[in-house]
Image (cartoon, rainbow, N blue to C red; front, top):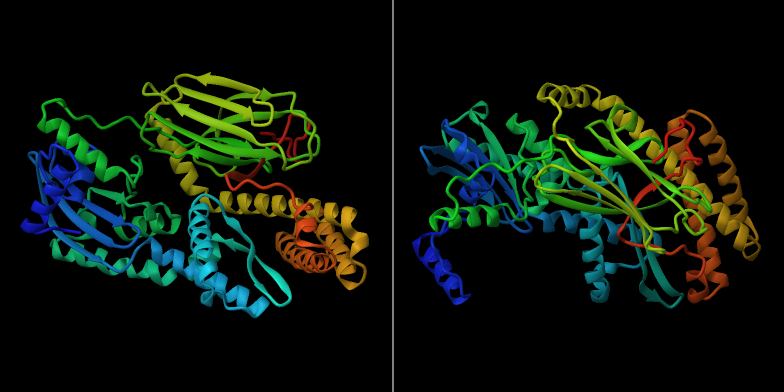
Length: 493
């Protein structure tokens, strides 16, 4: 949004009413450029700022030269933002529920807020995972009793549902370039602003239509505020020379089940930074986990650089999926990485410190990035296979558990169908046909849901909740295994 003089004056007065000393009003794209220190690069720069927020979308083209920021053009869509992506998920959930249960949740005001929160949460999770489970128990009730919503949404389906929204981003982008009298090849930098730019499809779109890899080092929700703070420091004389903050040269993460590298800190993240994720165990009664710390851009662990390994031992006996292992990466301003793993149940903790992780030769870093780009398709297939096998393995485990504990309560075709689908999936996992694994996983999931529905009919809602494993919305959908619980490739995390 770009303000006229009256609106700028009103903004300044609002700041004064809030108790702030307003030194200057600057526009958002200029603040974003300041946050990245692009005014310190010397030569004249042409910068495109791609700002996709919750409700509005703006594209701006700036020119920076001799310390002067000039907005050459701006274009946008005041009715396009992250809320529209949320609404597509809501509409899909309503449609799915109506087709299965015959109930229109769109007419249920009490369900609306829960659907909105679940849709936004699913959107956020799909920025870092390939699929997410949307589970809303007791979403509504009919004469037959309570109804529960349980759907799996994949990133591919999410992108399919929102493809036209992404397409709408192209018009303002192209118009802003045209209005500035430039060609796409004239852009020196592309900056992402707004939380909605975290979506992988948005990042890919910006890179494809601009031909530039967008800057990601500063939190897109905070980049404008940071730039404004930098400008305030300059005006107060407290900042004599604004330097571009150091960034992580390569992504950092740990190895998880199937040999997959799960990234906790992305490449080009500004340091200092801190990130925590919660993982779980891959085997029943697993006594320990090995934390294998990695650096690199490849999807599979074997192709990345090992920075170190350490063990978290003496875990209390528990079924797989129950322990919660909190893994934290903390990088200080000097680039020193502190990695810790803590069992939430016992509060036992192990950690290690890695120095010099960013001291790799620039040529080595560039080569690692190029390798990741050239092998992206192969890595994607390997990761998809690992994820498909992990999903199948988890589904087999859960189905066997529920059949073992409650199979006698559901006689008839539903139990037979679940047992048959279970056998088919176990046979598929033993083979190499990925399409069969996926198909049989879907079959078992459907059979398991039908089985669970019958179980609902034979038990109260309270007794059914007892058979569901405890869940935690913050737990990452990945598993780490101990040194003795390695997968078929002999890799552990």
